[in-house]
Image (cartoon, rainbow, N blue to C red):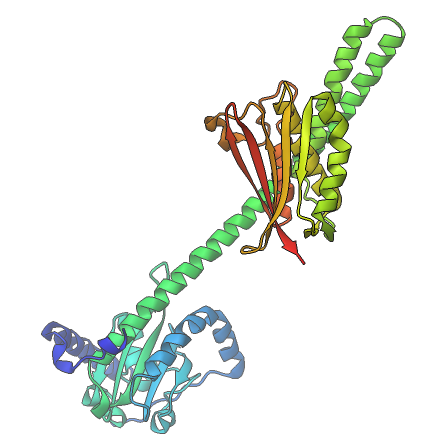
Length: 430
């Protein structure tokens, strides 16, 4: 694309020529006002190492984004006596690519200040002064020592429109044309786009950090509230049992109160697990073994609910890095949900397999229960959403959180009157 911009001089419009000439005349006036004469040598003004290091740090993003385009331009322009230059908004040269010993002797070099006050009319200094692209050829330079040279440059702007610096090219006048300016303008546009994207990413990261801090405060406050509620529930429970022993409170009513207290305690425990960052201990473990253990644990509850559990697994064990206790908690929760969904009994099929293309272990829990209406599917993993009379609505939210912390995913498929299938995806290891 840049090669296409390397056009002949005649393709520039008369309006552009006139605009450049006007800006060059004004630049000459500024040079005279600064005390320069055409016969003068450049005033070489150099930054100290300490000053330059500070400036380089302040402009590191600009340098990083500009350098690839500078290299590309250097590969297109004449290899001899040509340089690609980057300066900041104070006209300090931050980087130079290419060799032109005569220009270096005249002060066109890294760490030098190439303002009009020092160098007269020149592509970088004049570009910064007028905040516009500029092309300066031969005798258009104010100082005669630059009469054999040509320079083009374009300003680089930040997101707020402020000038950050300029990108320019200097070469022998005989090798130059206005098409070189097109390359510079194109490169500058790309640099500005990257700076803008980088700035937006930084803003998003800062916002995410603020939200994270706010979320931590909310979670901390919620944990304190939950703790205080549990303390109060313990007191209520103790007094109910005391009143029950003193036969002041009817046994049936007391048991009902205690059941509700236990239910609230369960909700608070699940809420604490959901909001508190999980300290997972990842160990390579056989998923076959974990599933066999959990199924054996749940067989009695399944028989009471007239549910048959079918466990289908490959002969060769499938391994994953998991926290054994947390993963068993997920499996138990999904099996309990399936049993409850089959009020009149049914079949729960648990399948373990490997998707070798994506490096995933797949664990499916498919029941023949009542199913979930399509309109409710998007709410299933939301905290406190439940269709059960005595459900907390935190079980599936907790499962999703645990699977996510394992680097996995959990998917749901369901059809009313047919059943529901949860599919866990976990990265497997050999």
